[in-house]
Each structure stands twice: as C-alpha cells, then as structure tokens.
Image 1: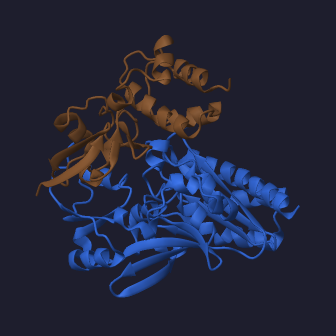
Image 2 (image 1 turned 180 degrees about the vertical axis):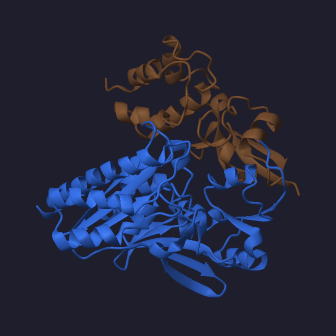
Image 3 (image 1 turned 30 degrees about the vertical axis):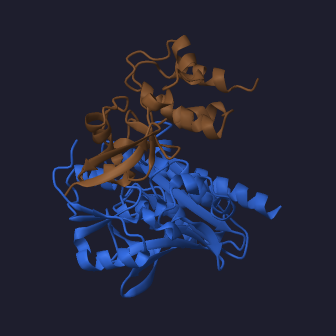
Length: 153
Length: 289
C-alpha cells in the first residue's frame, strides 16, 4: 500500500514512495539520506528529531511521512546550505555543545523562535529549548550563544 | 521504532467525506490531527486502527473564533495557535495559561486541544480549563450533530463519549455576561516540558460563583461540586480557601507512579489549589477595577 508523496526538502522538490505506517524521521534518515534529525526517545520528549515543517519546529518521530505530502521540510542540512548561520557560528565560538546529539534539534528550535521573535527574552529562549534535552552542556553556553545573537544592538 | 502493523490512510477534502469514511470504517478508523498522541499509541500497539483519517485538509476546523457568545476552538487548533490567540487570551485566560505549559514548543506546534480531550489521558492540560468554563464538545456524524457537556465527556482514562462513527468538530466555551477570572496550576518535575503530575483549574465570577477542577489525580479530570458549594455559600476569602483546601483529601484519589507518589500529589494539589484561588481572586479584582 505504498503511496507516492512529493514535498519540498531543504528547498528541493523530492518524491518518495511511503507506506502509511512509516514515520517521517525514519524516512528522512534511511530513505532520503538526511541524517541531522536523530532518534533519541522516539516518543516526542527529547527533541533530537526536530525538523521545521512549514516554518514551525516539530517532532519528526511523531509525524507519519505520508502527512508531509505537499508540505515543506527544513533540516539542518538545508539551513546551513550556504554556510553556517549566525546562530551556529555563535554556538561554535563558545564550544556550546559537547557530544552534539541534541545540536541539530536545538538549532532548529531556536531558528524557529528567532524567525518570529528576533529579540526573545531569556525566559522565551529557555522555553524554546525546554523540549530539547541536552545531557552534556548544562545549557548555559547554548543560552549565552543565543543571547549574543539576539540581544538588541 | 517502526509501527509493527499496516493500515490505510485517507485525507478527505470535505467534512462530509470524512464522515462517510467514519461511517464505513467505524471503530476501525482513527482520526489523525496533530498525531502527537496517536503516533505513540500506534508505536506502542495501544491502538491498532485499520484506517487513519487525516483531517488536516478540513480548513474549517482550524479556526478559533467568537460566535454567538461562545469561544469556538476548532478540531485543528493547535496549542500554539491557542497560545497566540487574542480571543483565547481575552475570554479564556486559563486555557491560554494551560496551553503554554503543554509539553514543548515542538509538540505545541502540532498537538491540538481537541486531540488532547479525545486522547483523554488523565494528565491532559486542557481538561481543567474546559471543565471550569462549562465547555461543550461538538461532535458530527452522518446521523447528525451532538453537543456533549465536557463534564460528561470523560468516561475513564483514555475513554470518552465519542461514538464509533463520530468525530469532534470543535469545543465551545460559553462566555459569561459578567466579569470572571481563572487560574491554572500544573505540577511538573522540572520547568520545561513534562506531563502534569497533578493540575488544578479554578474560575471565579463576580456574582460569587466558583468553579474548581482537578486533573491527573484520578482516572478522569473532574469538577468539585463539594468545594464549589462550600465557597459559594461561605464566600471566597483566605480563611475559607484554607478550609476548602482540607476538603481535597476526600475528593481526589491520586495514585503513585513514575512521576510522583500518591502523597506528594495529594499535598501539591492542595498547595496548587490555594495558589490558583489566590491568583484568580487577584485577577478578578483587577477585572473589576
């Protein structure tokens, strides 16, 4: 019962045959070769599988691939297609991550936040990454990097 | 984790098409809106539907609007949309407050209020706000439409009054003609995303009416007529709030699980009740000014 879906992945129109029971995260990773979304908890809690769907950060482990027909997906691969974003540079400057497993999800959640709210409060920053679990950094260098690029000049 | 069984998928373009599918497939069909609960239920094998009916093509169900003295929340309204809706902020502040505490931004961008009350997991965040607002659940099927008071909606943990061939189109919140204010409290293990270990919603009206609801401390969320009539009879003040707090032990029946012990839930429900009451009193005073 495969169905052909087409959707925009990182700016390119792509087509793939999917079964209704296939999860978006797995299709992205194993069928489309997009490896930045990770499987952490597989229940929508950890945020490692975050992708941007039509401009909103979502959990790709809780979405059926078939739902994506006609939609637009952005992952880290697309975000940094033309080089690192200021957010990524600020994170690198501070060595803000250690193992990096949470980094793609974290970066996409914050990208989504600052696209609608370029100068978020500390509370809003923390809220935006509250669903991206990190077990290395204690979050502080991540928050510092976000503050650096979002503070009012 | 792959879902270990197969099913069909349809994305109807009209509500009539959706209802025909539900009529044909009955309890073998499951509605897919945000899917944040459903995907987990399928992975865990808790539900084994033969058909998913994706209602995201039904644009009419997306809207949040005020119509005929009621606030309507469509079946596709996400918690993120609720959180950013001025009508919700103006008319059902407690729902706005609760929406901001649901899981994480990544889940709120997808999960819906209606999906929350259809999954009906005991710890859901939208039940207490809807209960104190006397909200009404609107269902549709080929046989017609039904209106079910949210107070009757929940039957058991993960069980509601929705019929086999029915879908929920929206919930409506009747808007009182007098001034009112509510407050929501949620107990979590840490700030940020977590399910509620317990939650409390209260709504106070300027004529002295008082509504109190408890969630995640029993198989279904429930109002407390005991506390409501006590406070309506004796008045809402600090002393009576303390007295009402002591009634809670006989009203709720929390369990011990991975998120909290029975004793801790009981204690914190009392604490949160007092906090919510004082917050609502203060907000109502501000409204009156």
